[in-house]
Image 1 (cartoon, one colour):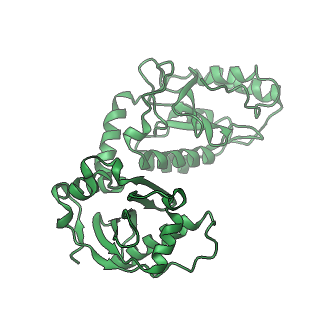
Image 2: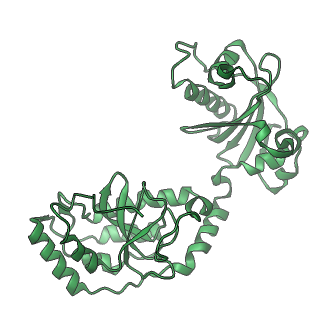
Image 3: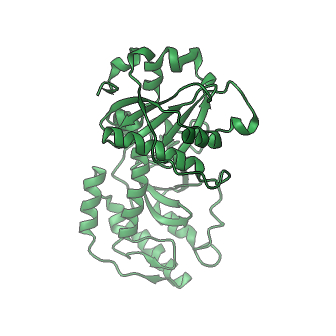
Length: 351
């Protein structure tokens, strides 16, 4: 198939005329029922993705859809990034139904704009666009290989991106954390009695620890193992058991793997220099559920002013991690000063 090529460094040097754009028809678009339906954009996007998938017998990781200045007599193009790390290019037949659909999803028709050719970026549950004029030096058509290379999905260079993240975090990893377990027990017991909490009895978690180590590449930390000898979660509280800890860690590890180092690192925010300016890392192990995707975690990759095993706050509503307590025993002691039930999270203020 001449319009499918393996992606490599040489693609960057290719010009528009080096790619083949055989005509392809989109046959899966339904008749339009409601032009104002908010889901129309995703219906259009899914139809294009399905068409490229059917043509290549490969999953489409990302699709660049290039629209013309004048939809009445110009051409539409698609550039698909396939799961096989190949690039597939095609011209999309401008049928009456296709043009009708495009007119609906194209914002310029509502603004009565002209000369507004765009590049649309389609993916699973994603839809965005930019005017072609946003790309310098007419990059789309003059430096097409560079344009295609600049927009490859992360999966195309997964090994390189993984190495960048590993190299960045390696100097900060500290798996051996100091712990005063006697004080942890003392403050935990006091907390349980003072707040009237009900402990879920501890159990053998060896299988969970083995699963964690297999995925994380490092042993489940001893200070958390020690803490889990006291409970397997606490009923009606934010304190999590081993199963929940593993599941939440896996969810955040998935995010870490999906994002690049550049996406994870926030150079605009500040903290006390104790936690990395990261959205998440595999060395933050959540154990206290603040709800709505936010957690307290043990930190085993602290910043230069931090210490291994410190308690940090991170999550969906945090750009970076923030220090909560230097040690677990100090954190448990601080919970004694919280008025009412420890499910009341108003005392966790953001910097």
